[in-house]
Length: 358
Image 1 (cartoon, rainbow, N blue to C red):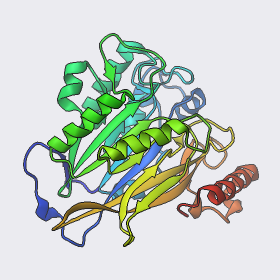
Image 2: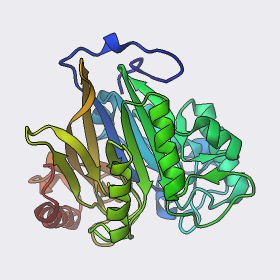
Image 3: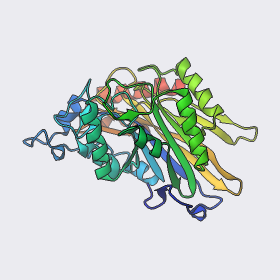
């Protein structure tokens, strides 16, 4: 992101930063995961497996860092407990802090933590995660040390080049629980109160970030449609979802003049993981564009970049994720031809269904 052009809202903030013709962008990526196989590939040979610095994640954003850094603000779903060794993969995810650090250094400004894995290691796991993110100096939402902290922080308000933007992150549930820590759940009365609070705080754009849907389904569920309608009725501007581990459609609503009124990205799929089941290696990097003029802030457009997550040894030595458009038509760049063929086949099949983006 462009450093210095956003801040957590605490005072009147600089509408002059944004001219009438400027467009700001918020980039979103899907599930950042850490399976056991990823830990094996990231581990530096001969180093202590219990230390965060023993893991190298420099390949994870090699091909997307420029896109994320060019955005004015960037958001990622962090689907693991951070910095509580021993580090483990499925079904109880715990990743080194070096993974979170790599996310931050490559342009991610906001970590989403309301997901089913945030309490995989209980209270100790959450405390380690919160302490690690605070030490990194990165903002996180969706989970809090207690109800009092939740009520004082949520929803988070960010001023992005003069547009007061609220982010509300919530999940259908968690796989485990914690003694004191709380996450924001899909409770309609509660979420509607969060939306009202965002309005009271002066939010001009409200973005809902639900962890929802059916795993491995490329079609939104009835529950997702129900929640979509509820969120928009109550004043949400855009919805960007996670959890299914596969991409789902992106849906726009425009007025008679073609102006974007609201946009829903039902699921961005995985950003990086060890999953190899059908459709789980392809994801979206979604960019939401907004502007502000004398009539106020408004949505302008959405942009979607198709991504491919390549497992260790199949494109580079370590795991990496890259835009499909940069390598489609270049099978010679893949040391294993099967990886290219799978990417091409998956991309062509899903592009015919979703029909949004390149």
